[in-house]
Length: 413
Image (cartoon, rainbow, N blue to C red; front, side):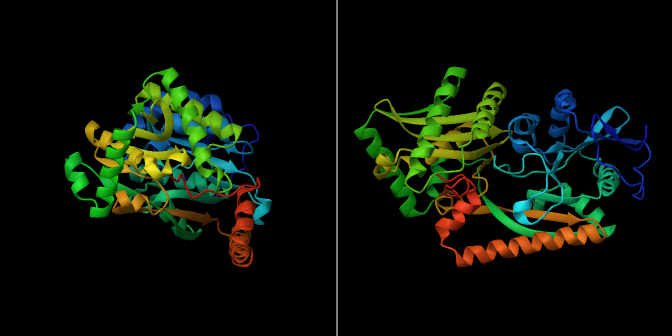
């Protein structure tokens, strides 16, 4: 078999023969058939467990579900590297269509999961101890595509993909990088709930305790976690309703909005419940759902994904109390970290003091096509910045949202 072959790609991308060959003994396959993606699941799970890139957002469950519901117009371009029968790396990529709305008429490669689902920490999955040979095998296949590569929501401090970036840059690819967001997080290893509360600011700690006490005195307070399929369906429905209630007065939300996004979250939460990962909480006051929090427990971390609450109960601080109780639950489970994921909303820093930076890294191939692609991207960014300066915020929000609704800050509570 050639060092770099195409598996199941009807209308495969034409590749050049100028890139260096993969290291001897490795076999590289480009997978474009979703059925082949499904068959890869057992090996994917085992590889991810042995990879520094291990994150819920690069699990087979998250990315395969994303592909099923949120990939119209894209083509699967997953690259698998093997040494003998052993899978040593997966680059979970896709070919994105041209973006005429951004003045860029070229296709590009991007991570699966990029876009509306809000995936963080996207990366190349490489087995520990096999990084160098895996990267040496992947880089030539990416060179052969002659497509620009756009890697979004990557954590530079712990990203396997940075090795690919360096290899391609040494082959003459142009590199552009910008910090795009931060993920506030709370280290919790060995921390008790009283110790965590003691580390909060005096004002925030007092507000939380007072509001929790008042809720318990005023209502029959229940904070319930979905643990069965029927509870999952009811809790997800409550979350969606409460999230949109929360954002209605601000012009609406692009999260949990389209039929495709709703189908994604319905299937993903079902899979997550089966795997024991789902942490979907609903706060009820006198039996009425007033707040909900959508979290994920993966390995030793709790990921805060989405929230919603009834604005008519805002004076009781139900949103704040829900976040606090979810942190307590995470501590009770013994997690090492509570990750609030991307977004620098002020309320997150009431709870967290540390952040991880997320970046977008773009790579453009040598030659006229790559240079033109980069120039058009720069012109598009300049035009969008100019529009934001000159147009009222409400108008630019509607333009950005594409559906006449305001763009919501990422996963706001």
